[in-house]
Image (cartoon, rainbow over all chains, first blue to last red; front, top):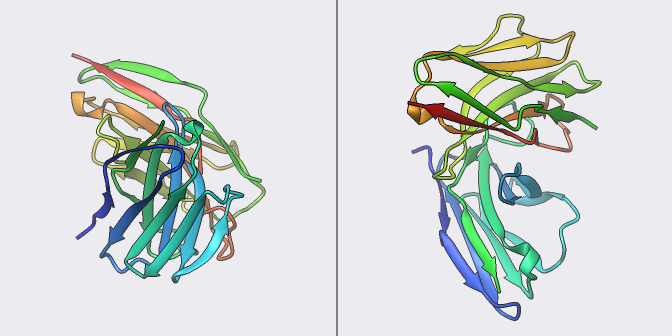
Length: 114
Length: 117
């Protein structure tokens, strides 16, 4: 099983809503990532979890709150978002943070903030 | 900080022909890894090919090969016998070889490849 599964695939929310994006992998990977991708742009790193601990936070606004309940799951909690936060949110995983292994990406969650 | 530059925002190739996508990078490290990722319109990004900096031999994966020039800090991707399914955004990416690397993957801005039937 080499899949990273993200739900939901599409999400529309108002600026006062609270929602969550979910990511799951069963490859035994110990590093998991959240990326934000705007149209026709490369992914931008948001957060990295290594062995279920937050390792990197790329100065992301607090309206985005990551959570890693266990080694297979990664959540991104959303609250009070702005229209400019509309983007494709990609989850990825890798063997671990320090190895040279590839990142495996999910299909992404397309977020629209109204 | 490391940077990755893809100077070709868009490229096109005739089906069955060969195309080369350019990538240059800047780093002061000696140990690192380079990748080409493909993102088709269906969005899921997948690895095409990877290269360890310490290896002099260019990586190949079926129709995909790289020209790795370490001194010039160049890492181009050659796609032979192009197929319609190769149409996608291609991202060149750099990853530090340091165990404590602060940035897991640095992406270039991407090259959108169109394949003409």
